[in-house]
Image (spheres, helix red, strand yellow):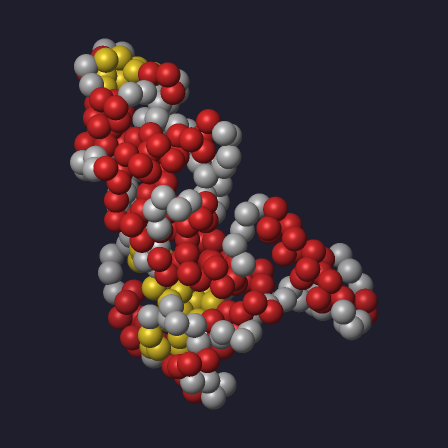
Length: 102
Length: 174
């Protein structure tokens, strides 16, 4: 389906995740973040970059991976993206929702 | 479908993301086998990842999972466990339980499942509350220093029910 994000028509799935990463940019990111009640800070951007890097390398995302990331610790991760951190951060980063149970 | 309705629909979805009817999951871990500990941990962590509060109350043999000296030595039960498809007599032989546990841990590592100690750290950092059962701790003559540092406290069952006294709370006995 289509969704208007930052004055543009973007393809998203039924959960609101971007279907095509090429449509993602910082404006889209900030818009999606705001929808989730998050205003992007330097640290948020760092996390988004980390997630996108993992996605491009096709490495699965997990909370254990966040712990080992060296970018952010788990406590900070939960406070930056409250209420489902990995779900929200991947949505904002324009990458698919992680399928892992851990 | 018009653009506005598409937008409205997706916005509702997005809002639903952190609004589940399940607000809090309370787990009671009463068993000391590795598969039961992981069941509780995976579900408690999964709850946090969904934006749901979670807490684990360790009682009876579940206390093995929060004892510093024992937590990395939890095992899978090879006797009385028909799902392993192993004759009971064989399951009771020395070393069989250790071997089965080793194999299970290897498979878990492949799936990037953290060992018990690391999993407890992750849970604690994720805001999952970890509680010890007062009665069982007294019964097993355990001291606070025998238990992991991440433990949030030692509770009576009454205290624990007090923590369940919120709408949208579910209790699960493992």
